[in-house]
Image 1 (cartoon, rainbow, N blue to C red):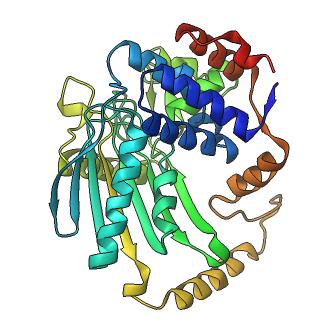
Image 2 (tube, rainbow, N blue to C red):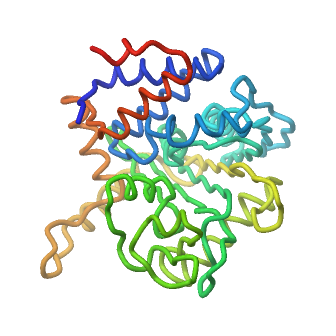
Length: 345
């Protein structure tokens, strides 16, 4: 298993995205966001996407690498952005920035994004908002993968939601997860490593529970996290990220809907002094961390705490990449005409 420095991985990803014919500024954003995911230990949304997803989407026209996002309407605290099927990372970062600017002016800012390829880790953009002393929320709909509670047909995407708020000392409290039992990229990792899933994550194509991740890719479906409650949230995310923003819902259209996304920023200081907010937040988190443990439990973890620990370790020691990911990067680079010597050192 190679251990790669953050700087080297960033350079490799940048070269690959540039070879996909993305402009320099867009390629830098894509590489930055993918590597940040790997640094935080969210390997399912890191550099492996270049070989598992993006090279294939490029080949079938689902990514227009040189396309630039365009603001097509601004109305008060609302911004509407057309992605023109370019790399979603740059478009999503732009959208979050517009939500932030509107929130500075109005106290609340929103931006919608339509017609883009994958936008990677949703928490990236909620963090972007929280780092500006705001509450950030991002929801996204996508292609059919998940069934409604009680169903066995693909209707919804994984429909992730991310929420983030600022903490003291420049930290951010982040919650970021798919509304399905697993994200599709985590299912791919489980297949690669021949790992079984927990019960209640997927059904096979006949509608029966299974723990084999390969059954999903053989026509199975993802189940909603949290049963009927997760299904209800999934439905509303499809409404918000699909119908409201005009991206369309996968269940209603024959073509790929893209990643319809809504970004919301709330300027905390419009409600109360930021210091008061962060002080009370730290008190709450201290109480949560000190909750009496149930038998067999070792620790109460805050959302995002594992990622923070991984980030600290990986910045010091390097980023471990499994052999499949490392080989995938090499194969993708070769397809794009890049020299094998990039991986030799």
